[in-house]
Image 1 (cartoon, rainbow over the protein chains, first blue to last red):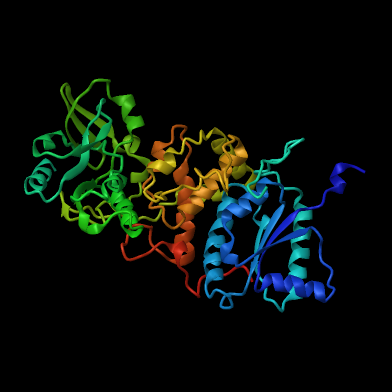
Image 2: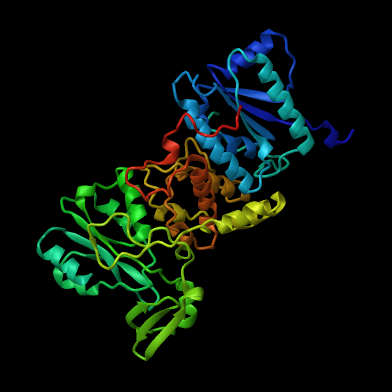
Amino acid sequence: MSLDSQWEPKIVGFCCNWCSYAGADLAGLNRLSYSPTVRIVRVPCSGRVNPAFIIRAFQRGADAVLVSGCHPGDCHYVSGNYHARRRFLVFKRLLEYVGFEGERLQVRWISGSEGAKFAQTVDELDRKIKALGPNKKMRQEPPGFSGVKDHEG
Amino acid sequence: MRETARQLLREREVGLVIGYAAGSEAYWVTPAFIKEEAQADRLVWNPFCVNSLAKYLINYHHEPYKVAVVVKGCDSRALVRLLQDNQVQREKVVVIGIPCLGVVDAKAAALKIAPGTRILGASVTDGEFLLQTESGTLSLPRGEALCAKCRYCENPTPVLADTLLAEEVAAEPAANIYAEVREVESWPREKRSAFWDGHFQRCLRCYACRNICPACTCRECVFDQTDPCWVAKAHNLSENTAFHLIRAMHVAGRCVDCGECERACPVNIPLRLLNQKVIKDIKELFGVSTPGSRLDEMPALGMFATEDPDEFN
């Protein structure tokens, strides 16, 4: 078996604690099966997601990033997702401008009751990224790469 | 300008005037910090006054005296940036505005002007920059010599000024400001990627673009932090790209399109093409004006509207 056929996408999912993380939880409770290629990072709010997080993910080998938060109007902190919406409308266009495939950054509003939507979003993204192949832009993983030491330890 | 500076200093209205003085070559001017009336004769104004002086104000914001600063239209947007960011207090600044007919790109001028030439006077016509030198009048055709940022100028007249030193200049209708951005957008993805990789590859990470930027005034810059270390010190394409993308997002909605980053860049990375992309998108998406052109309009990414476009459903 060649290395290529073993390749599975790596998707980093930033899920807001109040809606999308609960949505992912509900998907699990309902025994919905969705692609295991997503790695969920719980964040307090979609507004907490700094574009630097996404850049870092791409540098360290992510093939796609999913940012997910409460629907506009439903933010636990009132307006975090409105700020996130402006930010990611701009950031996604900027990524495309410098040569990323736009599909690699996906932003979705998923509420705590939308377990099925969460599963579907992840599956859809997984399919798209499998078609696109691995991300090479900005990637920092030469052979024997031991990883720049993170402050997280 | 000299008379205005003399008067301000004589009447002790300001303790310092920041303007332009002749540099070591005809096509360079240097910032001048005039504290005494007698020195005001050093001040010059000519089509080589490209650099923005607004950011120097930050160095004086703790001083007890007021500071007068000379601004062109584009620099006045930078001043609005500093005022909105509370880096400078309006009541401590006297703004000497110069309606501007465009400035000369020093690199283009250096090809035409012999070393050691002294400029005695200058005038601007529709088609050319006329420079009076000791050996006669020199003409620089506008098409060749004009600075890129002046080709589509939105604010030839400063948006903010206490005194204007010339007649107001009307802005031309600016339909094509983002023509170059649109061209890059129209390229296939691979070409865009190769284009920016080629430029980011050359970045020295000298941070001149940050240091000169009127929107970059953080006390501790994210790129100087070592913990957390968002951009490593390592010099490679990935980290360089991270630097430029993070910087573009940090100044998104705040970049006033003064073009100083591109001018300061020692390896000629087209930074304005990157920042203009963000400005263009923000204007199209959220219906705002160019950052810095209105004192009452705060940065677009610092606020929101419930009716903003949404493509994330």
